[in-house]
Amino acid sequence: MATGTKAGSTKATTKKKATKKAATKPAVSQETRAAPAQASSEAAAKKAPAKKAAKPAAKQAATKQAATKKAATKKAATKKAATKKAAAKKAATKKAAAKKAAAKKATAKKAMAKKAEPTHEEIARRAYEIYERRGGGHGDADNDWQLAEQELRTERGLD
Image 1 (cartoon, rainbow, N blue to C red):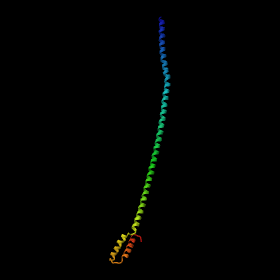
Image 2 (cartoon, rainbow, N blue to C red; image 1 turned 180 degrees about the vertical axis):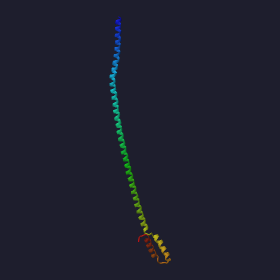
Image 3 (cartoon, rainbow, N blue to C red; image 1 turned 90 degrees about the vertical axis):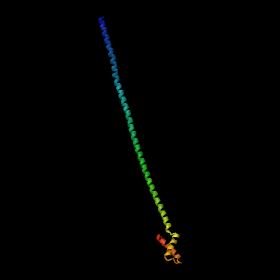
Image 4 (cartoon, rainbow, N blue to C red; image 1 turned 180 degrees about the horizontal axis):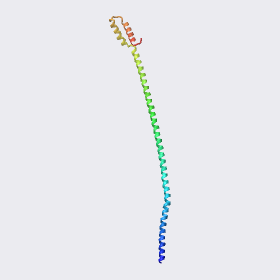
């Protein structure tokens, strides 16, 4: 019995050890087997988001470039329009100034034409001055009038 017990005890111990090893071994091997699979799936998961993140970043950069280009184009167009508007305004101002100058010149010509011909009052005043210069004698009123009219026309450059 002692031998049997010893043998049984040894068997039990061996069995316990084997069971323990078996329990430990498969767990380790499953973990070991699972670890590379898990690591490869984690690496794939890390790579995939990196690619996904790279795509949006590239897309964002392209969108940003497009927006910047669009803004620059819009700014250039606005500047061009402002330049055209300023040029048109300047031309309109010049045109208005030229028109105003022409109107002023025409008005001056009309005024000159009106002033050019001596009025009845101006001739009468001048004729009276001529009458007084010659001493106030009667009988030469028509000559005084004609002389006054001629003097005024000469002064104004009409003769």
